[in-house]
Length: 155
Length: 155
Image 1 (tube, helix red, strand yellow):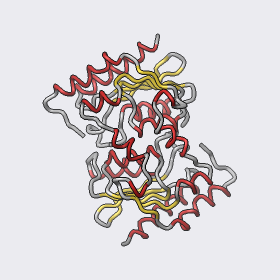
Image 2 (cartoon, helix red, strand yellow; image 1 turned 90 degrees about the vertical axis):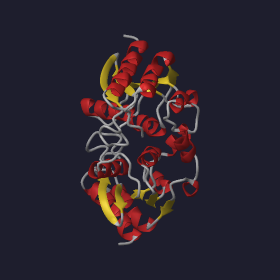
Image 3 (cartoon, rainbow over the protein chains, first blue to last red; image 1 turned 60 degrees about the vertical axis):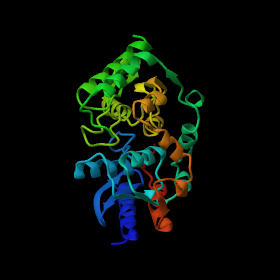
Image 4 (tube, one colour; image 1 turned 180 degrees about the vertical axis):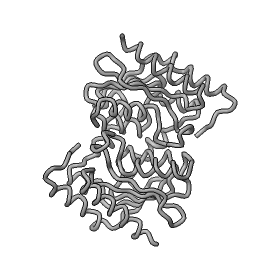
């Protein structure tokens, strides 16, 4: 089983997703040369804006391995990850990402996430979603509790 | 009910989350002056690296309103969103974000997401998670199917 095999599986999932009413995206998580989990874009079919193929595959892989870290795992996705999915890959500790379509191919097909890349680079006050800092002092209480907690599970 | 009321609810969730073994983060989604959903960080308790408070609140709000868009909704979060949660807010079409702790407060408490902000701004080849484009031509098939599908649900 080589990397083309796993990418073809992600591509197959992206095509099957279109057939079943989902978005044209598929992904697989691979560890030690075997598929751990599969995901397909189900934003519209499950009413979940976070249900991108990569997030679905990462969540399912974590369920299967019983860990919130996917160290030693590779992510094969039919399309370059959006910033949400890329961030999820960092939080999960994914080792390597293989992608089929580029973000430019995605934009040509009507899936343009470049605006999110642009927005993230801006300061909160300059973004198109207005953002306001509120009750900063009160909010710190949870972090104080966290620091003081002896048995906390860090991540 | 004013904005401080909703932020205090997000802060309360962040504190209760620490008490119940989760991360020190809470969030609420508000529409028309009423709370639609609540979320708390459950990364370690549910083995889900995407289960940040904001993602949990957004996913639950979408389930409740039966839509993958949260137009007209505001997100109150006890801490400035990480890039994953910020991107999720864009995909969900959130109108405004209120946050309690800043990302600098979070970093002081051991939750430093600045490295993800830095990574996202880099080209794929320059990132710490290596990234490789593979089978680009084959991957385009799903986008061709998508373009040709007459009854597709766009988002």
